[in-house]
Image: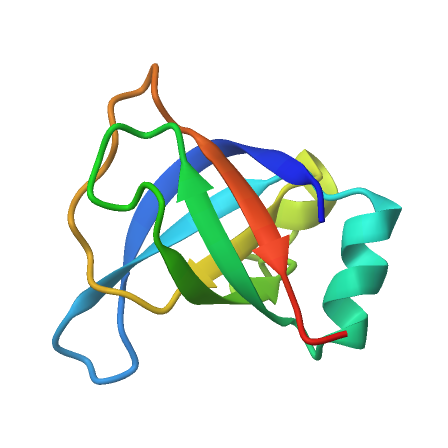
Length: 105
């Protein structure tokens, strides 16, 4: 699968209501959208180029068109990927990195 530039990082409250987890924002293309759909919008994500603990690790990611932020995807074209890992803070603005996605299909 192709590499995608990460445009932004944020932290959100995890489902357990206690911990934070990272989310990244990418600009998808049709290939990515079809690949995500064929994998039920759950993909393995490898982060690189952030100069942080996230680099080189593969974690589970849930692809979302940002429906929890009304009109976000329509206005920006960005999709959100919620990373299933602990929050270790934001990378430096000049080192937002890239994401490479893998799936079963």
